[in-house]
Length: 584
Image 1 (cartoon, one colour):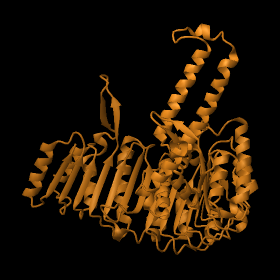
Image 2 (spheres, helix red, strand yellow):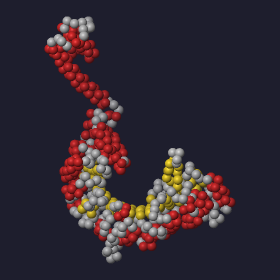
Image 3 (cartoon, rainbow, N blue to C red):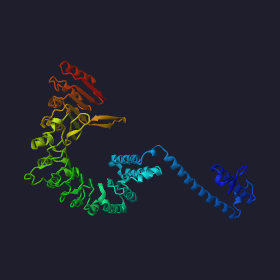
Image 4 (spheres, one colour):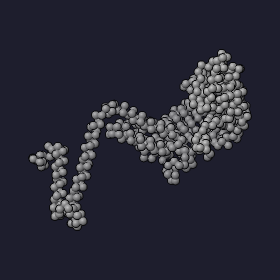
């Protein structure tokens, strides 16, 4: 077969793409001219007259042209795809080994997951949908990248159960025999998966999917705070399934509903379980005899729970390294007394010889004392207490020191910095073992919001001085942070106003505080509340904090003249402060 060129004829197989293109253009122009001649018309003839010609004279060439255009487009797409493949194959990135390409894809997918977890409390579901689109987009950069991604099952092992059903099944299939990491966070009724019949379909799908895959699940997070998704139905169907590869499990159900029973959890067949977090469940029949490898345990007890159930659980987890226990439910319910363990007085001390980090949150102080009386932590390194007494005394720390001193006897020597935080209703004390990395040793938080102005000041002083009950505590640095709130003025400008009035933090108060820690060499204050009284205390002839060498003020209205006068007076008394820094 030959084609006509301008000055010769050439076989089709010998012609270039450009020559074929020119020949095609001429052929199409000839067809157009023939069509016009067929109608016996000139180029100026109106379209109205053309449409009155017989339809078959137009339809047949038109059909051929459309068919031709489709085939040409398909051929161009095939050729372009091949050329892109050959071009990409020579690109620098695709000269890398497949293992490195797979790792790059894995990092991209991990970044998308980290971004989602960062916004967990705000918009988990929308972020989840965006993440699955990003993951799929990464695998479609090119055919080479797609082959690399599909051939690496670890890229598909992290699955969000709020994804579309087809995506969940596709990820599970592509992960092959890899252990799966599953999770979902449904926190709001406005989430897109919480409506009508869709809820029932999703619950049924979850039950079916978990039944088919529980044997290969290594991480499972089910955080559901809405009634529409029936967590009890899910757990009745899958809670007893053995989980031979499970390493981390988190179950959080609505606290105000009937609690999810945990009897026969995983049929006591989860030999590799290392981390367990539970909330909104019943511990009445929960005896984790098969979880002897557990290292981290976080429990949220419901109001009305019995501490005896807690002690039974701890007896069966001897290898624990981290323990967190909280009291859940509504605030008004937490203010009601909880039943103490009737057998705690007769119960022998329970030792957790490997547990180095303990957190107790929102318990009344008497319950905290009972827990710390029954459970002994010989290697305790970090202790966090949130809540405690609601009366004006030295706080929960003083009660711990008087009732269970062995809990805190080894914490003091490692303290380098003490940090005090004051809000309108909460006072926090945190001890660090170093000044820069902020590795926490212990922290205590007390609710002081119900106190009067006079009681609040007394409570603050008593709780600060109570730290001396910890043996051998000699911090090198003290930090004080006072909450500031922004309020709009009549002119529309925002101003910062201290939560504490100056009369609450008097000079006498600061003298008591500073006299309690005479060995500090650095003090940092953020916020300007009662700063003048603090400066007056340092300027006092009693010569408080004789080793103080560094002062840092962070606030918007620090009175520099007053600070400079205090520095001169201390220098004259032989107590110089080498460095005083003021940040606005």
